[in-house]
Length: 311
View 1: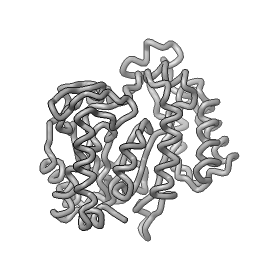
View 2: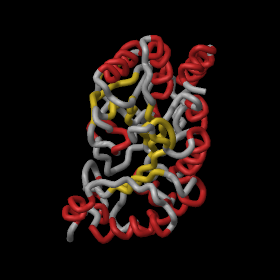
View 3: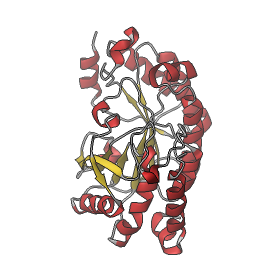
View 4: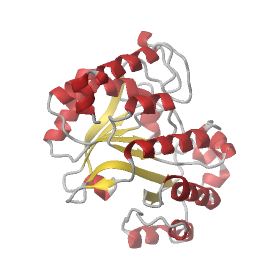
């Protein structure tokens, strides 16, 4: 089952309508704000009826299976339902005025433009709060010839309602798994339920798409790719997250352990977040992943990264 088949059968349109109805008392993300977005009301995500696009274009900073030779076709969606205190895209994730409002036809046109540029996929960045709007854009995009994998590039803070609507439509799920302990998630994102929601979401995503599959050129076609941002002094949580991935999902899961954390947004309000991670922390995380049997680890330029992390 894929988006084209669902569109041909009429199931995609039924999902579009179901998602639109949910906007009337919005419960599409775990925040469950229950505002009437159809009437322009906004909840935590600061987004009403229309999605807002902050920017879009070929992106070469993603994982190599997504970037290929012509880039990942990223669409940066404004607003967010999680609001981490250290968000590196804080200017577009929290600002109610960030981005240009688009309707379904506009969003479909952006997808088709990225395909015409030669991008290898459509990479929907921070999509969780605009699932209904993304679904509405797919019929005109498919009718216009869209034939690229859809990447759902999210925080991991997902609802089962949204993931059910996306089943068979999203080709590549790319969630982050940020926090293991509810106390940590509450402190840094005011979301104590994040760990539970993320675990549920990753299991459901893996059930839908399986391990990451590549084509003959090494480009991602379908499957699950998990990101984990290392945080200062949180190696114990990292190890718990990696253990969950290896034992509850699959030892063949493609994992990107990211060492790029730096204090930004409002992170400086927490003394423990006022530094970057060290090379020793990064190496410890990699060693833990390998010890747990995870072999499909993203391969950045390790020598350059470790030089940057030297302390």
